[in-house]
Image (tube, rainbow, N blue to C red; front, side, top):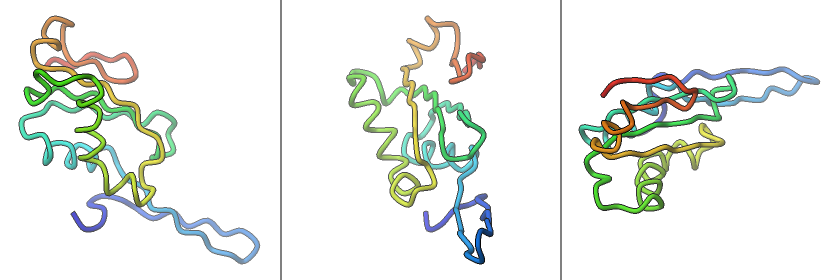
Length: 117
């Protein structure tokens, strides 16, 4: 992807200097992850309300047989562009296979909410 889909630019004026901060919306994060992990169920949570600290809960069959570290690497790889350009400053990842999500009773978001896959 080239550039943000639904991102907006926040302008802050301070001492006659204008700073531009690009942000990313939850929906765009979902798009990045679903493109890299087709068929994944994704829940994105803005952890601080600043649109740059996110939690993602991802359920994908592609995680089967993978270590926790490898699963996180897969999610980070999907979000490489917005991580590198600063639209995502911090990211917390929860990853499950469909079987693990079923056993846990559904996909749990980062804020404790529960979503059935």
